Image (cartoon, rainbow, N blue to C red; front, side):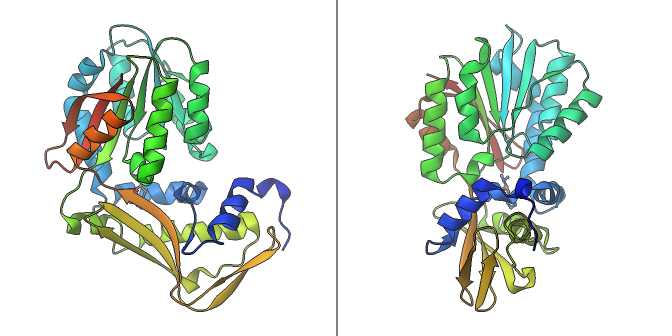
Length: 322
Ligand code: AVI
């Protein structure tokens, strides 16, 4: 198979070499988001079982006035950063309101997907031509390094959609501490968090009957076929996810359905997958409000306020850098 060098993803190659040499095999969930992964995630957000997006939208629609009052968003100019901006479907509710009310700010959406970021920039230009936008195509930790290059105005940073749930506890602590260190006193962080709730509700959100989540997970293999010249047969793996209510983690895996050897042309190597062997692909952690407050305080922030939806499924928490 002929692989064009420009399509070879060095980070993915490194992640595969490391992650597939461990037991159990694993790969970071950030590689779920190629163009097809972005599209499938947008489908997931529309699924009736995936309550997260609608709960957060409800919070924004119902409480935007209160949120921005608490942020003091109309007092002085500020930088509005967003980690993992995605298609901006929820953020647009906030951006529209800020523009309507005359807030003075520049929007910096950060995303690892170049594709989704350029779509977002285009749609914002069409829908809100007055908005000042500077897209930043970085991984989260690289983006943090860029933050000191922004103007000295106050930073208000959004980290919505339960994106932080995809961190392990250690990664989350590392991320928030790092971010607090780079921030100025008084900078704000507004995080969207999926709350602990009935395990039945959570389990369904990650294993829908139409198999959209399964397709999203399996797309990782298709991506490796395309970008690393791998020869995965997608039929020979199955999506498996479960919610563990004590840790509050949904864990997602791909499970090999038979003994199989998969060759990676670009890596000039092959990996063996035994029947029923797992590849761990994602953690989606759920938090209680107490866990959130503890996490904020341990990592250099003071919680100003929690905002929640009518069913108390989701929570947006506003933190100030100490
Ligand atoms: C992007 N992230 C917050 C989603 C989540 O809920 O963990 C990704 C996802 N994975 C399966 N369904 C949705």
